Image (cartoon, rainbow, N blue to C red; front, side, top):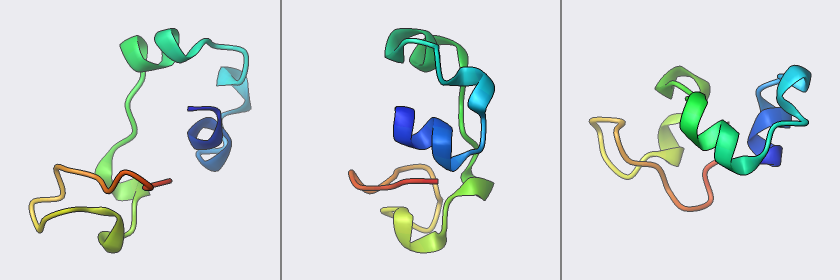
Length: 51
């Protein structure tokens, strides 16, 4: 989750726990390239996906 926070440029979230991030924050599909998705619906990410 820290890698995602850094990739999104959200330094204000660096000190949040993984649990806090999972519960309170989301990354929308716009932040991922097409090849990071498992399908054309863009609703499932590859296990290695990074924004």
